Image (cartoon, rainbow, N blue to C red; front, side, top):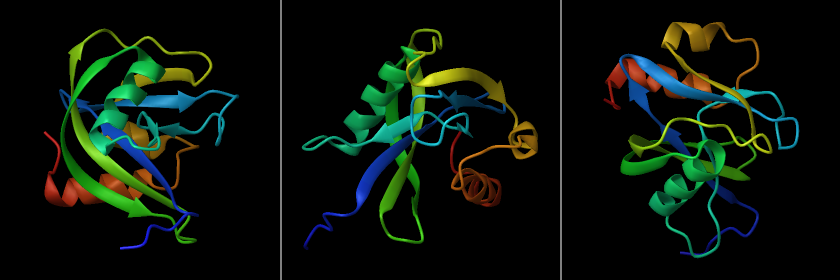
Length: 137
């Protein structure tokens, strides 16, 4: 299978604890500034998606996580971005935002997330999927 050189690959860490999702607000210094989303980012050359989840959560929030399993994927309409959503568990650490990447963070219910004014375009379809399937714990 030929890989599309214009397709960016990314991962998202979906962490659910006591019916609350770990959310971040992106910093002013990254793509889509101040948007709310789950932590995650691009997959580096030669890196597995699971390894990217571990690296991104460490870089953004100083967390050590265990990527459990892929639970959903999304491709932007223009076919230039493909994200794989992973159920993840915190192994060690307390969320500590890296200000270069994260402006704010919080643990939010699905209802609270849906009420946010500025979320990334892929977040609400994931929540719809999760509510229909109960895919992450």
